[in-house]
Image 1: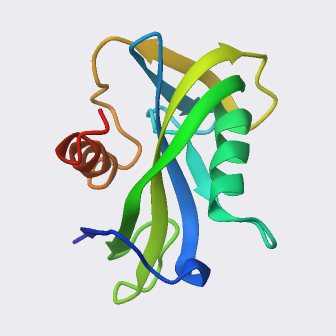
Image 2 (image 1 turned 180 degrees about the vertical axis):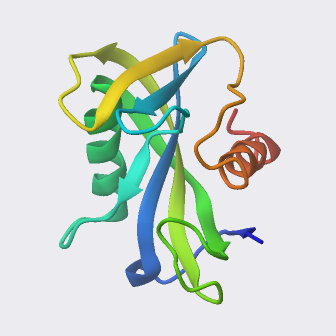
Length: 144
C-alpha cells in the first residue's frame, strides 16, 4: 500500500525529489521513458549541492527539452510504502511539487524517449498510485 501526503513546508534537507506538472499552450506535457511503456510527469532525484528548485529546472529541461519556461513550487509531498525509489515500506520520502508553463522546447538528450502533449490527462501512468494524487492536489490548491 502506498500513502501520499501533502505539506506546506518541511526541512529542506529532507527534499529528495522534484516533480513538475507541466503545460504548454494549455495542453499537458508528459514524458515516456525509453525503458517503460507508461507515461509520467517530469521529475527526478535531487543531486548533491542542488537546491530543490534547481533540481526541478534541470529535470524539466532534461525530460521535456524545455528551454523557456516559468516554474513555481506548489507544496511538499511525501510517499510512504514500497516504490522503486523507496524499498523500506515504513520510510516516508519527501519531494517538492512544482507547476510549469513551457514556452519553447529543444531536442531531448536523456533517458526520455519522447514527450507527449495532449488535451486530456493520460491513463497509463508509470506511478498510478502517486501521480494522479499530485495532480489532484495541484487542482485543489488552485494551481491548475
